[in-house]
Length: 177
Image (cartoon, rainbow, N blue to C red; front, side):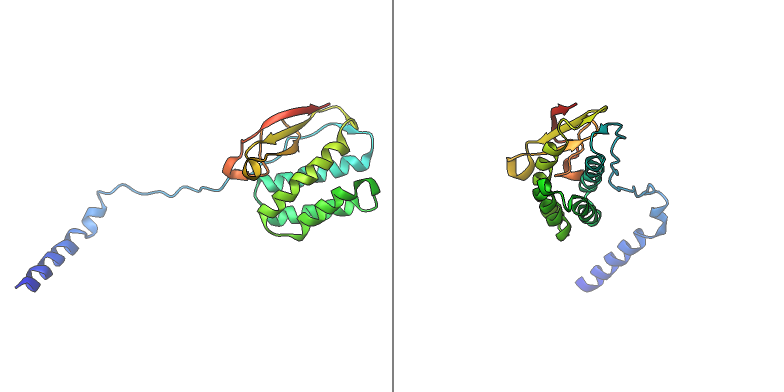
């Protein structure tokens, strides 16, 4: 008897879940949730040394790919940057950092080394250009609260250490003119 009641209840449930009820349900639309792709602002400064200008531009491309959380592109950009730094004795540490980034495909490992690359880049560009400003930006939350810096063509924060997770975490700490 219990089995018959159970069968009748299940059949009733199946019939009540038929196509007729779907007509009354609102249409569900999917939303494309692709992250925003960051593009850096144009930069119109003039560097005293054209090679430093090329190195800075490549640094910005690398930073942009870290902001966009694209480890593969960051790896390739770091390789190109290392090539540009080859033969520049004074910039040996910068080159070593670029090589380390190009050797790893892991985004978090790339971001960790990027902080050391940035330290060298600040010294490389400081006082060697005119025109647009370069912003030294800082995220106090990077690397478990130890914080980290990066360079930017614009005042608006686009964080290379957190990417889309915390895109606007940070502040301008210095303006290089």
